[in-house]
Length: 377
Image (cartoon, rainbow, N blue to C red; front, top):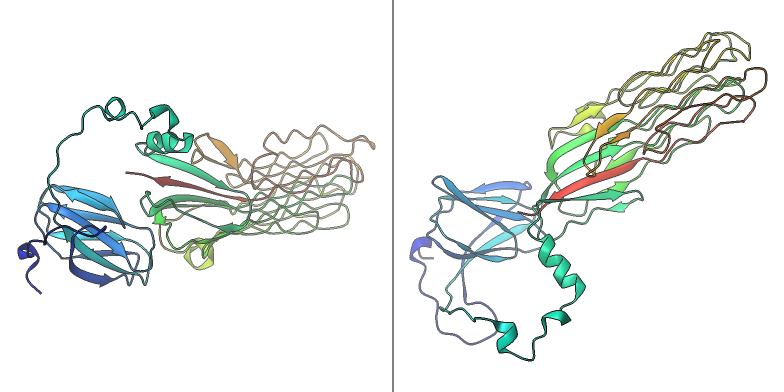
């Protein structure tokens, strides 16, 4: 085949497709490949054989042009390499096009009476204005798969939150542990990664793990109560108040070998234990708070319940929220349930609060979540 910078001129018109000249193809053995292929300024397109989304950068001396895959664009400068972000095991092909010259068609709405600007659909207008914006949040509260818009760059930011553990359900029950939080920056969003949302648990069971592809965040341990010691988990459940010798549940620090993976400079938040209690078999000894993704659970004593450990703060959704907060413990106080506080109980991945007397005030853990943010250049 001729050298790239001596691609023969394209022929005359006719047909409905752009007059494209094939340059070459490469295999995506990983999702991020750099191709030492140079070229002069012109119209180019990179097409996916599997019709996957992706992004292409034509890199020159001190300048670069980024273009979504499967779209033709004018690269106004010479380049010496092409950086490609796409789907692993895809094959992508580069084409160069020769186009005819045109002139500006002034005032099309007034010049053509058959075109009515007011008749444009709302979806078209919304899409037009959104295209220039930089990033968009997506919240997944149910299991399924992630779908990336074709105009977005294939690299996304993701926050995973495991499900919260349930609170102790008999008197002086402890708070459940919050789910662990895992944050990924600049990971591939192509190929429809599978999403599994960890469920918040009832008493005596650990919260479910939340998955994004092969990466996961562990759910929280359940809070102890009069009959059961607390559970371990992403963050441990609090120690029971109405039980002798009850120690808090322990947390689990995740590593690259236990859910974090290696792509996206993963950051981990969690692994904290639940709060202790006075360790007395009496209704005046309050349960400890569950561990949160940001801190250990507070200790319960004969005066007040243990406060759940604070969750991790993130603004990936556009609003700063806590995720994976520990649940508060309970204190019977002669049979009357206490005020539990638990300000963050409605946030994703939070542990349930412990019961005051019998099952009064007990709550389940809150489901986990996957939050993503994608970008449009």
